[in-house]
View 1 (cartoon, one colour):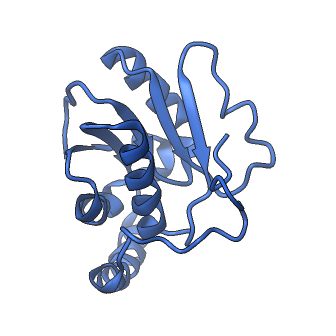
View 2 (cartoon, one colour):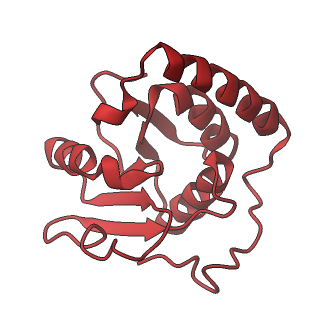
Length: 162
């Protein structure tokens, strides 16, 4: 986990990103990054979030809707935009797995920043649930190949990027 991220070509927010947009925009302004990428579950009601006056935002629906699907889309965007470094905002329980999956495809620098929204502060039951969920997700991640994502049936052609 990176407490004080440095320069990056883009800031990527793993889904559901709507709860972390404020953090991403603040960090983008602080680091003078003009590109933010948001993983969202649905475009309905996200138009305002996906458009900001001073920062270029790309919203996408990952396919599959998982960290692996997000990693594949990040790799595609990074290749298309020639990114060398990114900052990824992720909840603490997801952070190591996100670094692993994104790192499988993206050869550049990946800085992981902990999400700060209130939903990321878990009680004891939440941590037990996350331990079980993340353990299963890690097993799945070991067999996933996020670098060759399947076509997204919900977003034909352009992966539904706004």
